[in-house]
Length: 72
Image (cartoon, rainbow, N blue to C red; front, side):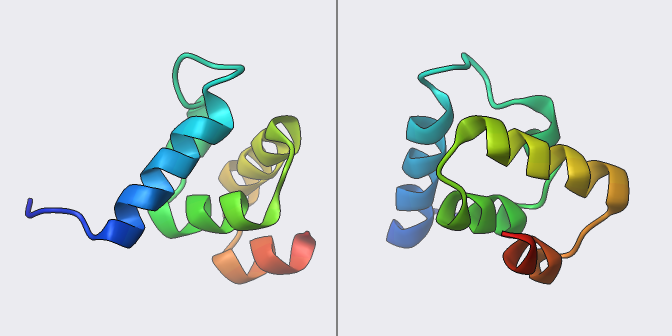
């Protein structure tokens, strides 16, 4: 694996900052999502609990990134 882009590093930091106040680790449903889906959640959702609900729905229903964008 090579180095990460500045944009990806910023997104990783955003992921940590979003979930760290409530969780020591990223919640399991979020960890099961592809990185692009996680970035979509971070861009659209402001509540940790809502993000987890959307992540669970993704795992259960296999939603695409487009569906995640439209659902919000």
